[in-house]
Length: 549
Image (cartoon, rainbow, N blue to C red; front, top):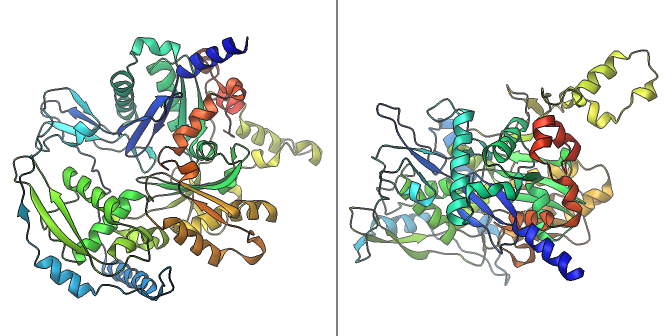
């Protein structure tokens, strides 16, 4: 009997697909797979004759700064540089920084050398659409528009060509189905026998989630689905019941406190910056140091990919590495000779990652916000939601006060009690009126917890996942920054900042956590079938989701 049950569970788990859509990468795979299939979350669509050209950039574009912003940027850079000069190495000796003039002089005199490397080719055109890596290596002069359906962790709805919600959902459908058929070997017609787990952000937009559920049910035709928030998935993947989870992605960073499989709503924060912004900061620092590849343009897809690679290869937060460091890199483009450059770097490699702790450096890529949550404004599919209960509760003025207190935390409109430092945007989403650095966001998140004991618990375990902060020494720096700022009464006996939970790649921790949860026996009651969704709509999420809708 035990063997049969085990075999049945195995078959069921093999029929579950876990989908994690990100701003840059899409991760998708069976719940029984060791690792997901991963590819850039991008599509190139052939333009119709006479159609408008449109291309989403790989990196968030830099913006023209005012003189005041430029001065603030330079002051921040100098402040970080001076802080690094005052730090000590692990053996207690003083650090020494490479003089910027010396580094710049070396790079100005550095000349490229031709190599015999094979020159890459552009992706062949002709198809109606191209997905993933191949979309990024299409000839930019070709008749294709480039679309990333998710930007800054949200659906990329915009007024340009291909920017309507319908168009964005069509892009998601095409990319996801391409991955399912080509990378997982599952045909569209077979999806009616599969179930889907969709990982959504902890700070989510309900209209966007509803649209993606429609895609799962009516577009792709899955047999059932359930949703899991990214931070809860990360906690499962890390194997911890309680933690302050920090997810640093390509274009967004989010923080919340997770306890017993629930992300505490009041602790959730979404920050409009991530690894791509660090790449732009790094490029700004490289230019100040006379970057020898003078023709580099972050607006070019190939150059953007090169800058990403340089950041991932050379940036770190290792205080033991100091002084001028010499590196080589190669630039290979179609129809151009392959060139090797020699580059000298100093503390630029550390200053760029430390922009997470000095958020004013992110001015380079435009204004940003710190978002808290999206107040529920009701849905036609859910007439008996908390908004309805709140309004009817207000009309019962003569009723006994006790009888009206129907879980006030759910019935109160969040907007009625904004703190002085908070405001709303035009769509009603709650935001903090200043951009928080990563350490400030963690402190703000934990501070929203209800008791001193909870605060100490979450400060004792901070988990960092995602691919935007994979820098040597990052955990040590973050722990040091937090230790200096945590109020004395909330300081835990031991603080642990984990950047590789269970020695896993932090980029797949959330995906693996969702796989674990999907295969648990207790997850059986979370599944929502198409008939339920079509009959009751978002009401099913309010009643069955593993989080407060």
